[in-house]
Image (cartoon, rainbow, N blue to C red; front, top):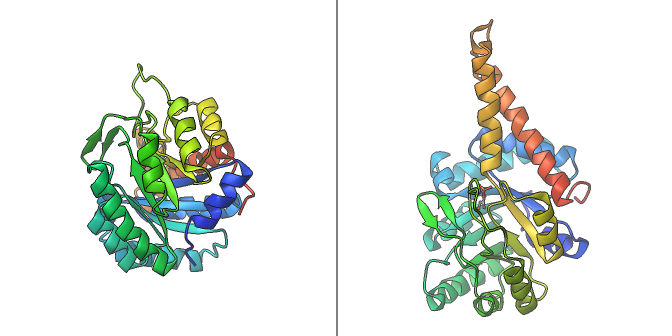
Length: 287
Ligand code: 13P
């Protein structure tokens, strides 16, 4: 059964580790992440962007697929199904469809509007026992066509949003989605510490997990980050393994064209990436 992310994140914050949110795109992605979480006895959050939700034929299809897998693969570790960077309407649709967690990303609205909309969604999630993530200070990079510059959040605005009763808070600290450019200045730990000081026990979320050096990940966890989002890195691992399979001509040998064979190296590569991240985040054995 899907669970809210609240308990797993509070435990992570207290135990000084982080739970990974891994974004899903299809059946192979979902199965690879769920099996790895089970094998590593780790809690896990499946992230679904609005674009990926559309690609997978809508949120109801996603909920059906994930619930079916939990049962048929015998997954017993805590799993949350979470909308990533949701709009107000997207969050409502996911709540309706049976997600156990949503993110409402109102970071592009003026703070008053972000507060107003977040507040409404907090009330809905509370009624149903779902977790909700809010965002202050937009995360840089491009995601689903939305480009942000990698802002540093205002700690007072973070407090105003945290006080609405959200489960976890994503605060921009110079992080960006996708690969980091050569001249990236790194995470702003001053911002992170200032946000933490204002929001107290609230589990913090680090977006843009791909390509952040290990020492920065560890320092971020020590400063209150309890959830780390990874997307691009699984995509790159899948791409590299699939490219190798085809370049080696394996798709042309025997039944190598069978999609179950063609997609197998990419599937294994996602499993390996997820395992490495769980090791780095410290969530192994914490289910
Ligand atoms: P990356 O694609 O950089 O790993 O970021 C993922 C993310 O933050 C999803 O919200």
